[in-house]
Length: 262
Length: 99
Image (cartoon, rainbow over all chains, first blue to last red; front, side):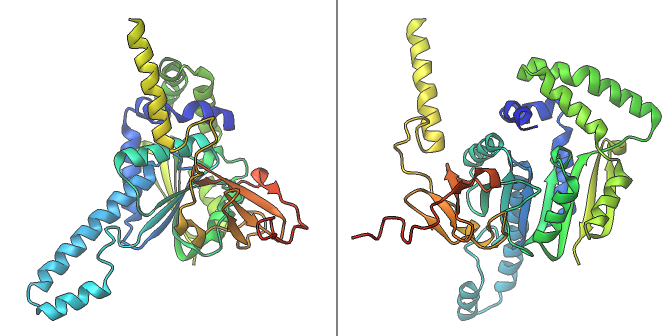
């Protein structure tokens, strides 16, 4: 699996765009909207090497923060200078993220390097850190994070149950688990079309764009072997999560699973 | 044609150097330090206990209890258990406080 991602890392974003016709961006947008983070949220994004979820998270809290500031400004129109001064002292106005933070953890150094470079190019600096780690053995303390996300990463974990247990461990009580992953299409006609596309088109794209047929063949096969929606839901419940639910996107081509630690 | 080829090569070397903050292969540049806010969350993945300290000379995160050290490369700590290096368990101070 590691070598697949070494080859894939650099062309990862291009491949995602081609394979999913750019729709993966929408899926990731939906994930962050579903998360609906407020400023001050601590996010752990696992297997998020190239930073897609992390950047969206930062954009989201930044815009929420902007609106908060605007509302406050409107309210402050009627305050005296003394009161305005005091409020600036007390609030963390200097932080455009409102103290939100995201830690990106991935087992692959190449993916993290690509992510870090992207962050530099796109101008993301505050509230973002990068750790090389194993989802089955996370190097984080218990009860630390508000949200745990794993987008298109969990199917590459050998022991999904361990990764889920670790996710549970590092989340704060009240914290949320969110998983975005390829899943199963139940509609038989769509399923056939999907199979056709996956097995005929994607490896060819892999060869043409990344010069790597095999890695993308592997990716397509790993998607087929991955547990379907209900099974994954059960596994998440086994790890201790409550109110576990899933939302199908594009008829089940991908699904977002969600659970809470109480 | 030849000149253009050379120029492009130079450009490539320059951009890869400035991108990571240290030349690949030269090993002489200051190692990138860890993002300090990370230390709030980071523990040893094996023991799940807090790390003892950050060792600046080797740019590693030390777990003294288990006698292991995790390297930090390009500012990214490698917290995968297989990457941990065994430190000498007996050294009272890592040579730095010896007169």
